[in-house]
Image 1 (cartoon, helix red, strand yellow):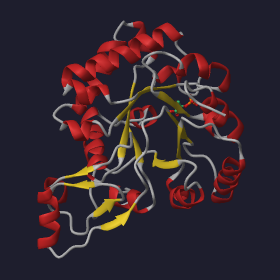
Image 2 (cartoon, helix red, strand yellow; image 1 turned 180 degrees about the vertical axis):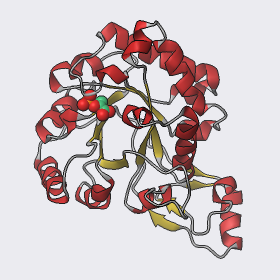
Image 3 (cartoon, rainbow, N blue to C red; image 1 turned 180 degrees about the horizontal axis):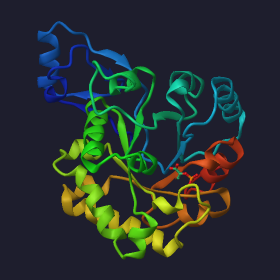
Length: 300
Ligand code: PEP
């Protein structure tokens, strides 16, 4: 079932020119508020994603515009599997180009999002601009951002900015090697998930969680499938404890960290796995699609 972002009156408070993503549901109060202000909702963004397993590519700081276009052309021309949703998170400079070039093939997401709204925040990219560029998703709390000093509190503010703009946040959680050795992997992940506390069920349902053990990212190492399953199940259980259990059940928990075509079937086939967040192997169409084809239920 397609999931449609919900826009409430509270989301519109203090927002001068709201951007309402296509397919969004406006509460009656939100509609009234817009009408009173004489504002016609500006329709932009892309249709809501389906609840298929997701394979999300994080390009990090890779690819120029011509390289991004070449990837899009190759992906468009390739035999793509059905039953799996594809998302590409390129550098900000390629967002709008890719959103156009991949229409109908894959959705586009950002690798980060500003914790601020529009305003005097030099160098920040606000939710409104990401929606304007065609984004549907926004990664928050990626381990490389946490390594650069992002706290849970900041990640929580970014997540709420994304939700308020109708973007689906992909909340990255995961322990360091040291935390794992100290037997703290579960407690670290539980703590990182606390940023979801207090979200209304309709908001929570828009969130995706990506369990990415920090030591597995870009290292070629992965936990064993049993260890991954245990952490994914732990994350789902922690979510259900902290929120509306029915809404929490609808939050996909992806695995990320050195996923490649050769290990994708094993990881994506785990009972608690809702998809994959892929770095290095998402830079080439062949390996990205190799992973997508391994998703359970993928056809063709
Ligand atoms: C990532 O960047 O989120 C990631 C999982 O990278 P890699 O697949 O290269 O480990």
